[in-house]
Length: 445
RNA sequence: GUGGCUGUAGCUCAGUUGGUUAGAGCAUCGGAUUGUGAUUCCGAAAGUCGGGGGUUCGAGUCCCCUCAGCCACCCCA
Image (tube, rainbow, N blue to C red; front, side, top):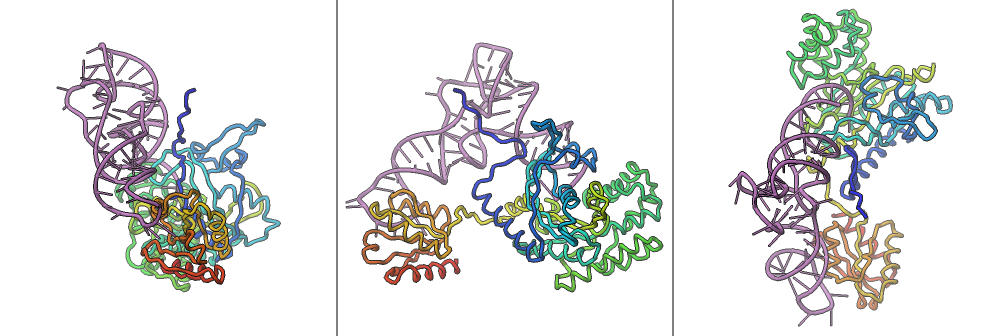
């Protein structure tokens, strides 16, 4: 019989333990940070009615959408982000939930786009959103969560770029380019990548702006100096536009609020050129770059939107949220060598080499687990040397070694696998002493 | 979706202008007098040369298609 070649689809991946362990750690960290601000978990179906997903229907999302007919002939699609499902979810349940509603959602999404480093067709998003409030407090809190997230994950060198769409929109209003804002923002977003001249050329070609208008828009994004300096210069540029003035005002409040919470000002960069591709953002925008690996792109982005669920309900639901790009972040951490090469999830290894004593091993392991310390008992009574080699390659921290001699004497040998030191621990009084010794070794290594 | 580069053991790669049974290092597994991770030594296993088709007496080497990875565009996490 011909074998079926084992393979995975383009952009879809298997996760081996060494990839999955840091992945789960990252998810746990995100959950912890989100919960520390009072966000609650939700989940929604992977599959939605196609009309739910295509509601906003730009050609781009349409192209990337995985869609098909289910067995009942319904047109369905796999979710390509967590924001659209949130919109539907909110429209359906907000009466019961009440506002403001703060939720986080960590789940897989699918996009049929071309793959690249850190970009896949199946990937995980870690969104958090606060809906039902326009308060600048929520804007500030979003910045704080992003900061805490990156710190908790282990980054110390990163920059959160912050902007407000209202500033740009205000200026575009003044210039009479309001209806071209999506195209112009998209061009502006490329400033760092392709340079001023090309952006200006693209604005003229794609948006029908005049050279003078393009120049005005670009001037806005070339302001230099500290955040406070930039803020000050922005004022006159948008003067006369109500939207623009409000945007500048809110930016100032967000910066002040984040500073008040004690965050180092250097971590925040007021950058009027960042725009985000998504055109549903209407207020503050965040993008987060790793200083050591800026080319991988933003690892945590988000912003404020006026009316999340406008397609699904007449109730106006303003909100703000951001999304941690888990897979991109893991790719970055891999590249920066930040991932420990741990292949075990239990810290304690127990070799099984006295064939007659399986019951004793299992009993002892159960007692250690009872103290909430993970133990792996080797499944075969192989040579001790081989078992230790296995323990070494998997990255165990300590080994509890016992054979006929030890069991007879009511002791075990406790070995620190990092230093190689070992000590004899008595079991005469039960396992409490052993557990305490294991804890003390684990707390050091 | 468009364009470019790449594809030989688990990993990193050799493989001469097409020429017999495709190699190395590392990793894996076993052994070197019965209970301690290293080094060393011995041995073993492991490849339909990504897959399919074509040219040829003969293809890992040349051509076409396809699949996958990377890069750029597009878009974005």
